[in-house]
Image (cartoon, rainbow, N blue to C red; front, top):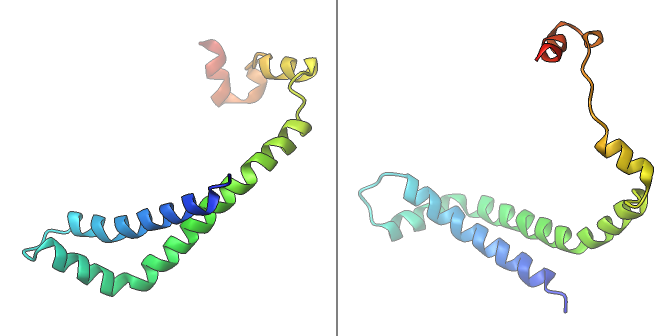
Length: 108
């Protein structure tokens, strides 16, 4: 069963809660926490909801498209290829041909 939408909604709700609670915790105030939370919500309501929608959409897209992208990248890069293993495991040689900054590294 696909839970991408539910996970995206939970992520958006967590964003809403943190967007209201964190500014109240950081801000030093003589008012109660509930009054501060109401104030933050009233002043930043549109920003909180728009950021939560963006977070929800981003989480949903990440969960939905990651398996397909992994298949595409795996097909592009054949992990069983000997050439690819040689490229990944090849040492990087630094010589004086790279310029004065990197030539100091070759002395180490």
